[in-house]
Amino acid sequence: MDGFRGSYGLTAVSIDADEDGWPDIFVACDSTPSLLLMNNRDGTFREEALLRGVALSADGREMGGMGVGVGDYNLDGHTDLLKTHFMNQANGSTATTERATSTT
Image 1 (cartoon, rainbow, N blue to C red):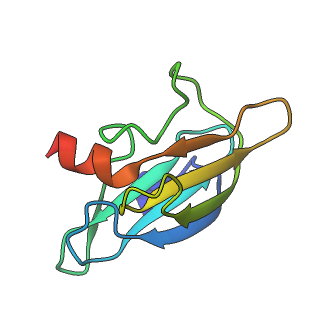
Image 2 (tube, rainbow, N blue to C red; image 1 turned 60 degrees about the vertical axis):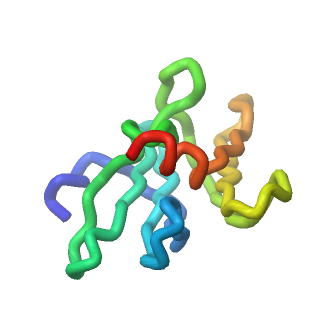
């Protein structure tokens, strides 16, 4: 976990972001990029939030991630994330599995 020093994680959730049947971990961070830890299927994880478009806001800014909801937000059959932010920052939803499959 040394690679994550300096991250201010507030909420962590388990999500199968790439729909491979293995649990991945999303961490909403405050004032630092959020984390998406993808399961390597061997007891280890790799960080891919920036690669998969869930680390920063749409305009590339670090946000004050406070909480996370997981579910099929847009009813397309894929799991989505809804991240809430600190006051005066827009909340964001991400179709995680769509991003995951489009980048692999």
